[in-house]
Length: 465
RNA sequence: GGCGGCUUAGCCAAGUGGUAAGGCGGAGGUCUGCAAAACCUCUAUACUCCGGUUCGAACCCGGAAGCCGCCUCCA
Image (cartoon, rainbow, N blue to C red; front, side, top):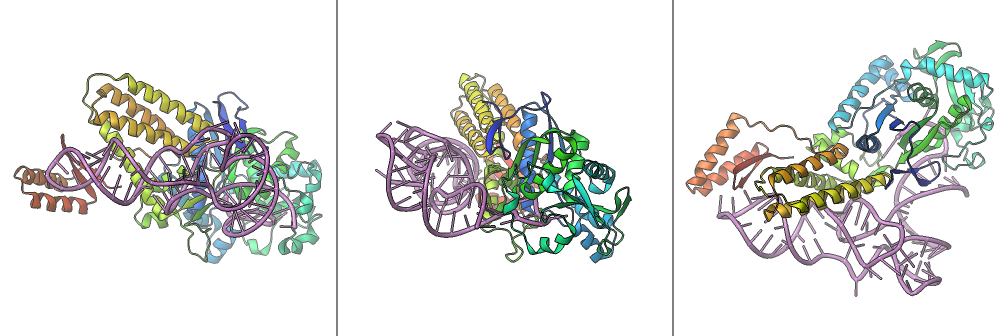
């Protein structure tokens, strides 16, 4: 089965064909760094990570660009409230963002362009739009003239005449020719304080939408493969990107638009009043491991609303533990006689896994395939119908799956002296059949965050997830 | 008002015409000093509800209810 993605542009699953064979350029809308990112944000970044990992798994050379919005109303307001410079203000959240990405084992993009270091590119693009007559000046601002772009609404299927005109738009209306025209450039305002750039098109700062057009085109070219973001970005942000980009270049901007749905928390939408807007930090502080968060965010199909629950985190913990235990079980295999059935199981699993992921990244089905393999191979291990070399092949396949999942890398377990001694003491007690003592020591070991299992090969110490 | 999505077991979640994947949880069993892990059995006569199409529908069509999203800078 060929790789297919649901393209928002056509509302259909389409076979994926890159512009340049073997290579993929993708632009993923990134964070505005005015606060810590919450798990909803990470749901989208996790989807993008899955997308990039699977493309790489398929052998594509991926160039991913994720913008960092470090100047906008919120960052300006935040820095002014704290009476610090905007870059000082945003640095904390930018650093935190990258720390969180690492914690979640989200692969790094090739480029993380920041708005404030790409003013020139944005100014150039705005100039081009002015020159071509797609934009106009009004006081210090520059707006995109929506009526000049006939295809407006092709992504979101929204019709301009149906847009509800909100109060806030109305208050600006006198400056714009049309209420729905959006700002490419915002002339300096007192509220902006020292946040402004003196440029050929005036003193001020860029609008939000122009950032993504300018930076995507700089790193990926005027026409590229994939553009993604949360569903909320579909309108107006992505619609506006298309309008300004295609007006400026006269070319099709992006071939495939992919949007992820939002998540809800414990069945309710995230909101300040419910106090259920969790950052990754909030969750880790409650004692959960980032792997569990990764698993939860990953395991629901990206176009399905995800219900994030703490019970779900527990379930994820046990599911991951099952996979780790399986890898451990493989290591205990001693058999010499190869079993052709193993080869069949691996072939079947690999092809089903790829069919699932090829079908618009159906990770839920892909996970089902992996757990089927785990059960089937565990059974062979129990029945001693598997050889050491078979087991190695299975492990290799699991590692290959994990290139996509990103949950099975395990930190090396180093037993400190105290732990080693406890394990030895317990073994001694067991030899002497002093079960009380042995159980007491086991409790002590568990207090150190470890579990101990007695196997025919001797005691096995595991770190609790 | 306009546009769009979702509703599958105790929980999470696949499946989009051929008779319900998978994970977690729960019950029982094998193994074990006891555990743990692993394995085995069981855990939705049934997919929000009501109509319709069809030999056959969770899947298609119509309607209802509930939930969610976007409609100018919220992933």
